Figure 1 (cartoon, rainbow, N blue to C red):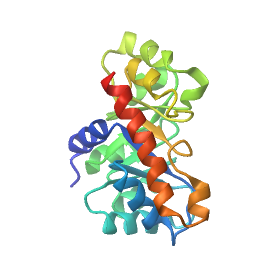
Figure 2: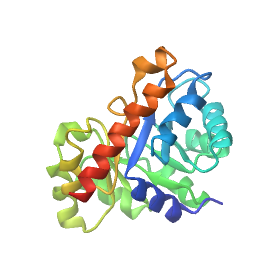
Figure 3: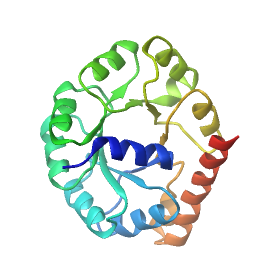
Figure 4: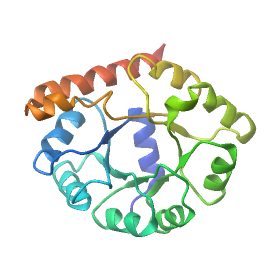
Length: 215
């Protein structure tokens, strides 16, 4: 069984969750490897794509030291499918209690999406391991402090609109890590099958995060 606490610690230590969305099945492994080699331990493969479970299983098999999870998980049946495929964490854009409960039962880290204090409390009371602030661009870094003020030292990972330019603001506001898709992943390079550029783009984002956390 997966140790959700250990997975949480790996994500926080890395500081970045790469959101891999809409990548062809024949390219998912080389793309994931390039991003992992750039210094991103946590790889989130979205469940809204075709054959997502197969993609998760393939990346988990080829990159055994990476932390491989699933994103855009809307319900418990989907969560079960990706967990069966090897997902070590499950990320949702919303707060679905059944999904949180299922993840808890199987020792898989649950990161439900929240925006309001009510959603945050609901997620925490039902056993969420971390909270995904989504979409972060809508409310900005200050919303993290607004959530944590009355609720205490909850773990918040903003996703959606986080870039190398504003990552420092989110960490300064109390984020434990950030999630990023197009700001980290060079989709033009993927289309050109240029994995060197994919790695360099991801490495630049990682460098920005590391700088943000040490300043």
